[in-house]
Image 1 (tube, rainbow, N blue to C red):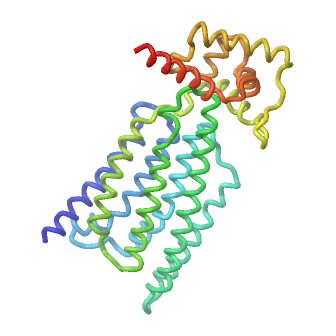
Image 2: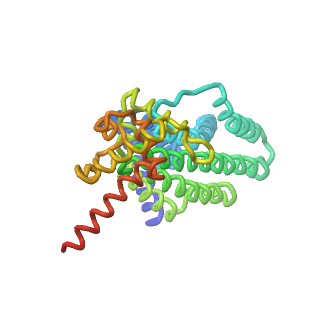
Length: 327
């Protein structure tokens, strides 16, 4: 009896926390990463539906209707997709849907068909259909987890061309979410499908609860990923697109201009100690040199053989060493 009470209490905390956090993300009081947070709120809301049946059983003493459960099962399948779209907007605020994104609906459609077939079966429908459904779920998780990881890694490389400090914009916390969701969801699928459990174990629910609180903390600490106007964002995209597959860049200025600007950059770093500015980025520095961000990125990449982040932090490391030696 005590075990059941503890589990019910944890489930209430889980469900309530996800609903509250999704509401915060939808309303977005700080007005940061608007589209990304909107979709992230949708992900959290869908995630909360995994405990709807238990909440219904506790509050009304019975499970929801068969058709409601069928509806919930179907929309739950979109959870990894919504999460992936959220990451897409975090890494590219200007993202727009196109016809190729219709492919996102292939697995959900297959899942729905199998779910309906299972629901219409009257003779022992569980075993074979449940194996098929769990297989589709696992495939969905793997596809969008891998795709999400790739997007975040590309983002982390891209922001080093622009920012001197990536803290708060590198989306590391989303990597942790992907890993934990993948692991815990696979455990949940195995527990629910193969062991026919009505409830997730208390152990798994406790892990989910702490995990959700961690998500709340890191997501609320997230800064604006690209605090740029349209022109600045266009400059950043152009810088990214000029890189070839070998990592080289197209020639933007003559070798003589490269040497001259390189000398000015070095002088600015040594005399002005511009690297001490924690908010320094490519735009601010290019304005000081009266050149375009594109040209400055080319000079740093070609002339110093480093990206912007590496270039600035090299000076910061040297300054730290200097201060430590003086103590």
